[in-house]
Image (cartoon, rainbow, N blue to C red; front, side, top):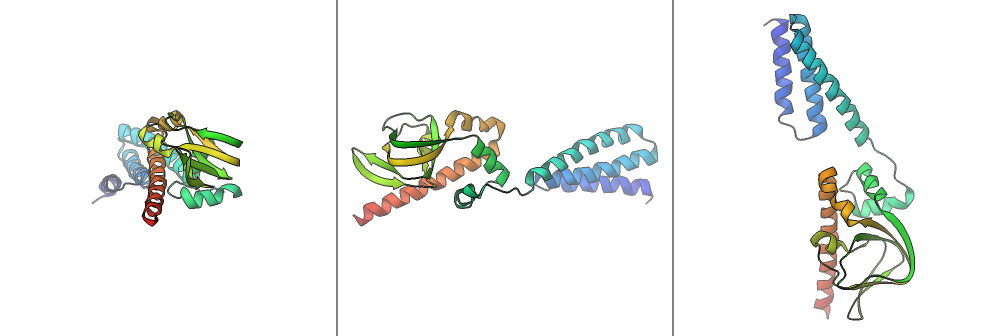
Amino acid sequence: MDLIQILVNIGYVFMLAALTVRDILWLRGLLVSAQLSLFTYGMISGNIPVAFWNALFFIINSYQVVRLIQQRRPIDLPDDLIDLYEKIFLSMRRREFLYFWQMGEIHKVKHKRLIGKGEHQKNLLLILSGEVEIKKSGKLIAKLSRGSFVAEMSFLTGEPATADVFVPAIASYISWDQQKLHSLEQLNPDLLIKIQHILGKDLTTKLKKDSEIVEER
């Protein structure tokens, strides 16, 4: 087998391997190797179209490999966000978490009703400091503090609020516009799936706690 045949076979082996991986970075990397081999084959054999197209594909995929490596490079989080990330958002990469965080807006409130029962919610909330009270028919059913979501049921189902939410003293929270978050379905569907998973987990934990309280009574 001469050099030209070896280069062609190496190129196709790398392309075959690319079809077997799920990680996009590995896929791009294997394609770069395949296209480099086929480009070399084209140059040696004098097949200019093969050399040209594989050179173009090599440049495009090399750029994407560099971009993906930069995206996956570990980044430092602000000190005040580390506990929230480790407690709630570990399923996201840090860069994804910061992107999601920057979509929100931080508020500080005092003695305020945040949500009224029966109201359709426009925002998803996450408590940052202080406490909020959840009441049904004027009866306190739960207190939420840092790291607890509010209105996640509304975000997941589109249904109106099932309880009133009050800030009895001072609290701060971050608020995300639900419409903007749902737009991630087109812009970044993987991130939206992770958000939905996190909210589903939070909701399940709350329902479990409610069930335990009822059983104790």
